[in-house]
Amino acid sequence: MYQVVQVKFPENAYNKGYSYFTDIEGLKVGDPVVVYVHGTTRGFKVAEVSKVRGLSRAERDKAGKFIVQKINVEEYEANVKKHELVLEIRNKLREAKETAEEMLIYQSLANTNPEIKELLTELRGIAPEMVPQLTEK
Image (cartoon, rainbow, N blue to C red):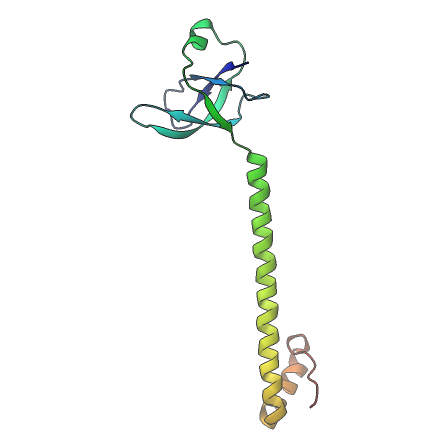
């Protein structure tokens, strides 16, 4: 069975409520929803549920459209966190790859160029954490 709820649009300066039918269970005041709007600003709009109970007969009678869906904010936030974690991991992997590639090049150069080998040895003495131990070939 359908119920009628009122929604308000955040950009509406008049703070006017609009009545919509819904079959979505568990809607609460403050829930973000998607509705279709006719008129000059036609299209899908985000609104906020402003009234679930206690609508007057006149408010209920004004309903002529349906709420499209409730916005799942928790799922959205979980997706954002997941994406941020993926980016963080990829950046760490990329940094490790670049460091390893750089060290392989230095090691290769050090195996054939005594000056490079000496510079890497000197750098290891100054900042050992920056230069992994080179293996002799």
